Length: 380
Ligand code: GMT
View: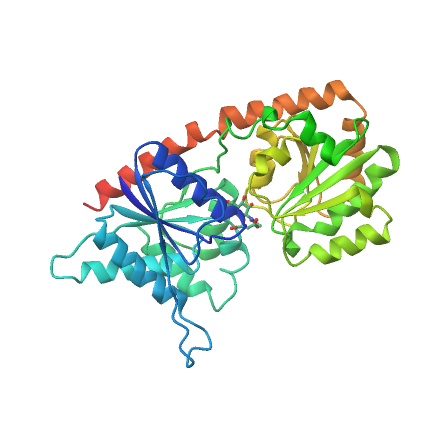
């Protein structure tokens, strides 16, 4: 198939999923065209089946708000016509599915009327935050309803979209995935570990875009409690608006030498695989891709019981779940686990087994392929 993929190219779950999906599809022989305003950050692999088309937004002085969605629609239509794409797959509804809808209409209106079905994948904040802003809700609902196919990355997100948007389409749940060959314990070496922690120290990790929904300061609070009992380092991977608040809190608590802010990282697997525990104390996660990536590396997640997280982490078997803001309980889980090497490693193995059996790319990518086939059949 020839597939156009649009996503936010920056550091964020939906862009990561879209890019990894494109890479996996290209490895399976599909021709993939990324269409976005910048090259997606994880698009580093050279593959003849991968093409990248940048969307240029003109900055005319009249435009206080340059119309990216229109420039994107134009580029989508152009690329689809030039490369005879079979379909577009957009990640994150706003504004991508609106642009795809325009592109589909532009091509249908041509004398020889090319078909361009599009699939929208809902990721989370496009529904839970942005889509519920009254100013965005009607157009988001409209573009979801106009999509030829809609997928959501968890049952939770599917139910919430149906309930709050009252859309009439079927929404297929296709879970997020991880490449279990890339995300595994052995990608990290003892030498790399020694760069971050002494042998007697444990390593905890947090990975996100440091937005308020991630409750970064709870991560610091949990770590401080753990640090009182257990020698440990905390690796903070990512960057974003709440970084300096978290840095200040670490300084106030006197643990800043043990909290290492690594910024945005390219080869995330290598850092995750150094850790024993991942902290994900988010206010909301419709899936929690970072936790899954950690689990594949045998890193045990301690997370909040929110959104789609319980679909990924089974409390007491493949990680621990606590209520939002309950930093004491999260710290207790971490201390108990880190104090029992046998249990820590056994749970790490159980995490990997879950990642392999339910969320491995080899299981999930064929579900997307099958979904695309159905959409193409329906719209031919
Ligand atoms: O919150 C983020 O990390 C960004 C956001 C996005 O769309 O880029 O993430 C959402 O999509 C991820 C990938 O599908 C999910 O793993 C996250 O749980 C989801 N974030 C929220 O629901 C807050």
